[in-house]
View 1 (cartoon, rainbow, N blue to C red):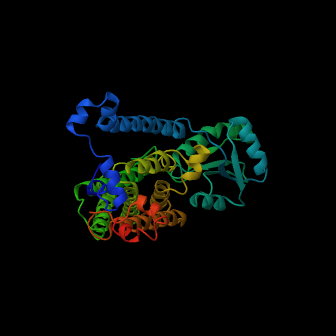
View 2 (view 1 turned 90 degrees about the vertical axis):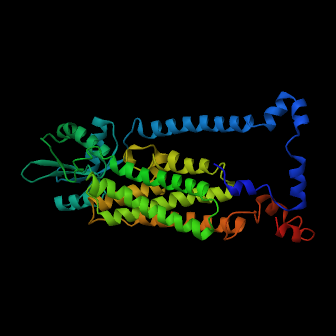
View 3 (view 1 turned 60 degrees about the vertical axis):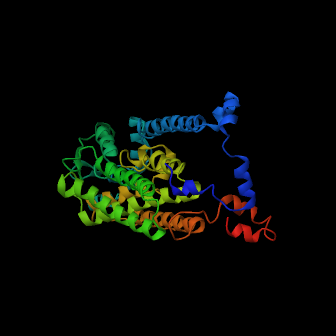
Length: 390
């Protein structure tokens, strides 16, 4: 993935850098014919091909290992549930459940059934055990909050009956849509926005390398708005997979695409188009996507992913779209704050580095290189004029 930015990078104008370029010029045909095999390998195209092959090999293993570790065998821990009871304390129920199921629960007491239901709507707890005065027992779960946790709680219902000594009726207070019984569409929607976001940025930079900074930002916004529309329209009005509120979800997905594209663009102007995909892939595909909580609830993920998912774009997108779709009366501010911070940081850093290295016009001669910046303190007096054009 190269562009005019990369092609222009060797064309610096400082005397020292020009001499270095001359010293490392391509060997002549005579030199190449008499060079040793090791030198021909080092100076030819096979060394870069080897480097890329090794990087792809490592990333492939990391990709498979990351998703297998995060989602292959989810282990529940500290699952929050509510309790409305006059005969059991939260500590007693938590201890009994852990002894019978091997799962650790955080049991929170509520005075009334209405209070417990409100806590489920606000996604403070994943379910609630309610003991009625007449002796009946209801166990509320919420598939929309996390299908994996809801299935876990339903599977634990027989053990609950053993613990309290009475039959338990399981009620899904917030079921998933009929066309999304496993609750994975939220994850795929966020995944599509992220991946198409940075892939679109890559293709724009490769195929429209002469765009000015204003042109790049304009097409980033247009591409994100149209891409977010396509995703929201497909899963909503077109296929009816999710009962989404179209315009708010469209806005969240467009924002996510813009963040992913701006993050790639920042790395591109910072380290060049050849390697910009690597840190982008690590941030979004290896960390942000599996930690999002879309495929597996955060309480079932390893601690690292449970923590990271809260502060990365994919997790924020999943939570925002989930709230808008299933809990419109109980929206949370946190995912929007996370997305806003990522938007300001990614776009702001991209613009700052882009202006520093290339100015506001189309990428051409590099205005500043990191090497010239490192030299600048040592040559502040004698080389100020030369460095200004480096």
